Image (cartoon, rainbow, N blue to C red):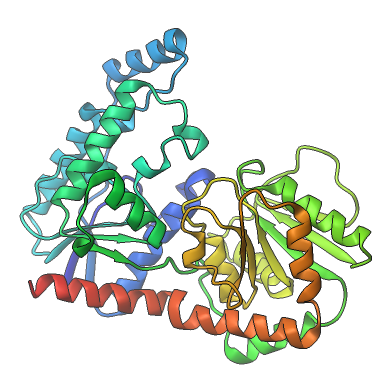
Length: 387
């Protein structure tokens, strides 16, 4: 199978990826690597350049200064048509069976494909309007452009792959897309190396000693619920359960006590960064993910890859990867820290915790590892090409 893919960023150079997009960009790179490992011939159409226009610049200044609203040039037809022109040119010179976009609708908004086009993303941008902070103060023009852009892409795509049932349902409700062209496939871990069964059992054995180790990973302290994670660890210590909270990706906006260990941003694109994250995940008893707004969160798959159960908000598509009693627990978004503490206290017993950690690791291997994800995707592609 020959697959051509297109993105607005360079999948081959992670050192150039901005921190706020590491999850999306990393997933795109993993998708390509996985499809190649399964025998597909996967190649980029070429590095896209973004059109810089004085018109979009003036619009941004107008909406910011006179309307106090956000205008995004990436949703403007001027930018989108420039992307499409580049893709259409490169597409004529490839024998690919499928055009794949492992990002979002932006690069392919105006593409008129002459072969099956597949969008593989976590969710539609329209589903995040008034849900994610950066899409909650849109000007009318950007909102209209964004929704029109996605409707065009979703109608033209032959297959849509989303990471969660929530994303699929949101897309159907918002854009009227038929369920027959939608496939739900979870996103795998961004870690380059996965634990063997023996390495997992060794890590699990080490967790028996010492305090309860909680891990919080997120660049956005506020949106990811860092304050709730801190309160959970604080309350557990107050209840007599010795606990450490390890924070990765951000800096708390206030002084923290000694039981909180702040590791800052760790670059997972480097061998040193991968090793440090692996060390933290292997030592952790639970991943805390009390997020306030999320489509899913690739860190949930990363935790499962180490047999670390996740305790997360039941928001967006999180329940598609955090299975209650199997790979952790989801809590209503309005849950207080006490609810998390009750679960942790009830599952701290060695046998109880070991059973949950083992079921998390087994769930990962069967459903959310990249080999498992790739097999599901290849089956969907083959079905698509067979008509």
